[in-house]
Amino acid sequence: MPSAKRRIWGWFFFDWASQPYNTLILTFIFGPYIAEILGDGSRAQSIWGFGIAAAGVVIALAAPILGAIADTGGTRMRWIWVFSIMYVVGSAGIWIAHPQDVNLIPVLLFFAIGLIGMEFATIFTNSMLPDLGSREEIGRISGNGWAFGYIGGLLALVVMLLFLAESGTTGKTLIGLDPIFGLNPDEREGTRFVGPLSAIWYIVFMIPFFLWVRDPRPVRAARGAVPKALRGLGQTLRSLPARRSLFAYLASSMFYRDALNGMYTFGGIYAAGVLGWSVVDTGIFGILAIITGALFAWLGGRADATFGPKPVIVACILVLTAVAISVVFVSRTSVFLIPVGPESSLPDISFYILGAAIGAAGGALQSASRTMMVRQGDRARMTEAFGLYALAGKATSFLAPFLIGVTTYVTGSQQLGVTPLIALFGIGLVLLIWVRPNGETGDDLPDSPAGTAAAA
Image 1 (cartoon, rainbow, N blue to C red):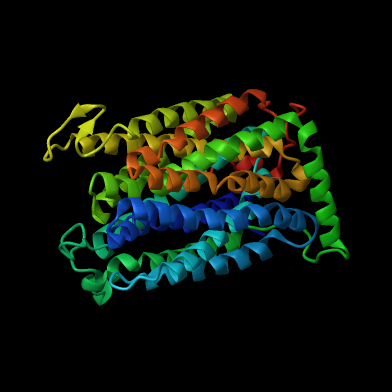
Image 2 (image 1 turned 90 degrees about the horizontal axis):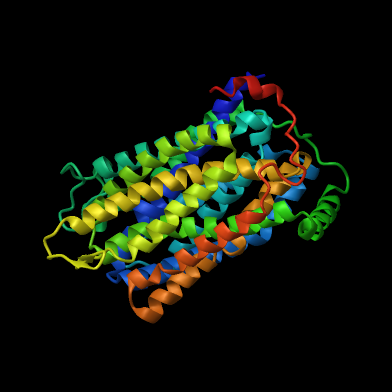
C-alpha cells in the first residue's frame, strides 16, 4: 500500500498530467491557431465560444448524476479510467485541424470529447481531496496541487514554443528551429501536434496517479446502487434551498468560475485578434501567466490554510474584476484611452501585466474554491458534492462563451465582446455574502489519517 505522502504526490500528478489541455489547447496554442487560420478574430471568438458552450451543457447535465452514482456504488478510479480515455482520444483528434482545409465540425467534436473527459475526471479526483488531509491541511494540499499542475503546463508550453509551434509567417519556432520530428511547417503540423502532445503527456504522467492513489470506495456496486444514487441526488437537490451556505456558494462559484474560464479561454484569441499577436507571442504571454499562477496557487494555499478559503476567493475576484475592466481599454491604438502609435510596445506590455494578474489571481482562486467545496460538502457524499460543483461550474458555462460570442457578433468588436465577464464576477462576489466559511454548521472536518503527510 503506498504511503500517505506518496498518495498525495500521486494525486498531484493528475493536475500535472491534465493541465496541458487547459494551457495548450484551450488557451495559448490551439485557440489562437484557430483564430489565425480563420483570419477573423471576431468570427473565431464567436465559434470558439459556441463550441465550448455546447460541451459545457453536456458536462452540466451529467456531472451530478455521475458523482452520485460513484458515491453510492463502485470506485471512483474506474470512472477516472473511462474519462482518461476520452481525454486522450479527444485531444489527439484535433490534429486534423489542417490550415488549408479546416472542417470545424469534427475539430470541435474532438475538442469537446477531450474537454468532457478532462472535466469529468477532475470531478472524481477533486472528490479525493478530503481523504488526503485534515481541514487545516487540505488548503495547502490543494494549493500545492494547483501549483504543481501549473508547472506541468508551463513545461509543456515551453516544449511547444521551443520545438514545435511554428510561426505562420516564418515557419520557425520561438528559437528559430524547424518543428522537430520532421513536422511540416507549411501545413502547421508543429502547432497541430499540440493535440497528440497533450495526449502523450497525459498518458505518461498519469502513471504515478494510477500507481499511488487508492480509492477507499468498495470495488463492486451494491444491488440497486444506481436508483439509490439518483434518489439521493434528488434529495440533495431538493434540500439545497434550505442549505443556504452551500446553495449560495454553488451559485457564486457558478458565476465567478464561468467568468474566469472565459478569461482563460478567450485570452489568447483576444490577443491574436486585437493586438495581432502570433501563436508564439501568445505562448510567451502564457508562460508569464503560468509562472504567476503557479507561484500564487502555492502562496494562496498557505493563505487558505491560515485565513480560510473565503478571504482568498474574495480578494481574487476583486483583482480579476479590475483586470476584466482594464482589458477593454487595451488595444493596438490606445491604452486606457491614451492614443499610441502603431509601433508602440505599450499595448503589449500592458497585456503582459494583465496576463500575469490573471494567472496569479486565477491560480489562487481555483485552489481556494476547491477547498471551499470540501468545507461546504457532505464528506460521505463528496463525489456527488463535486458533481454539483461541476454542475455549478457548467450550468452557466455556456453563459460566458455565449455572451461573449453574441456581444462580439452584435458589436463587431472583440474589446466590447468581453464586457460580460465584468458582470459575472460582480454577481459571484455579491452571492459570497451568504456563504459561511465552514459550511452550514461551522464544524471542523474530521481529521484524516493521511493528514500528517500534508507537508508534501
